[in-house]
Length: 353
Ligand code: ADP
Ligand code: MG
Image 1 (tube, rainbow, N blue to C red):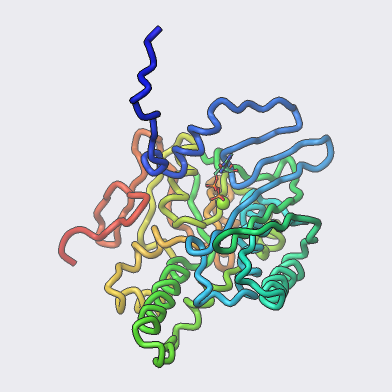
Image 2 (image 1 turned 135 degrees about the vertical axis):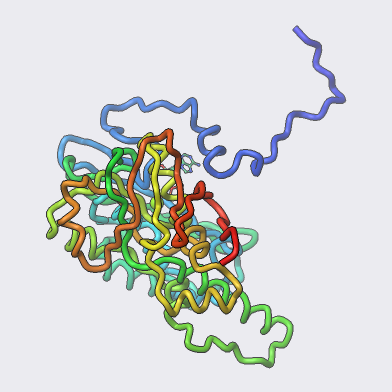
């Protein structure tokens, strides 16, 4: 055996070297499921528990001050609402219905009771809208900043749950709503914050940007799609994920877990014209905002081509691509007719436009 060298520093690997998903994989690679009731573990928008009745889906998300929100421009009521939304969105992404949440807080002494009442007014408003019950949580103190961790629990049906892993070659790729707005809302809020910090006398100029700011501060999850439109159209997505990190990154998750490739049509990615204009004003490419911006909380899903007619005329659903063989990779078919490999982050337009 090698003699230990007391002067040698212990091995220290920077967490950034693995990336978020590499780190999760690294930390959990030896963890195995012991119970038959743990039907689906790590790797999807939610875990699936099977106790013999309807499958239960469980998902948890943490929001950290300074990372996920900035209290300079996030009203606490909106923050409470949004922290519920991001969690129920993961339940909807399984094609399941959220029923309960637990809320855990770590609070610094900077927060008053009145401030926390505001946070809870937002949580309550979201519980009302999404029809979920607040059934518990935990409260502790934090040295610095506010942390909100919410667990959402929902109910699905065995035959209709949608996993990230079910996409097949030939399936049609669809997305709900419109993309890129939440990211641009953040750009506007950050811009006004910087102006305010350098000159506190100046009133923020949020202009006519209500839509994008609303998408950032008070997003909604697609309850309507999962509870009404998709069941009414009578199809089950072959795979589904919610768009928290940007369409490109979510499409990679579906492709990896389903062992397929994809061709994404730039022209099929829904971006509102007013949102495109805001992107251009920021000297940003609208498609980059849609593909890499994130926080839209729309749904990205695939359907069997036999169900194409069921989705083709549905409101607020856009067909944006097709799943292909894994060996063909994940590609973007641009409006200009070029085909590029899709990048998960910060894709930029090439060529002369
Ligand atoms: P989402 O973006 O839908 O919230 P994440 O990307 O956060 O999903 O997580 C991907 C998967 O990894 C999920 O199944 C999640 O439960 C799991 N996961 C994330 N962090 C951890 C962790 N620290 N330990 C165990 N599992 C984790
Ligand atoms: Mg998710």
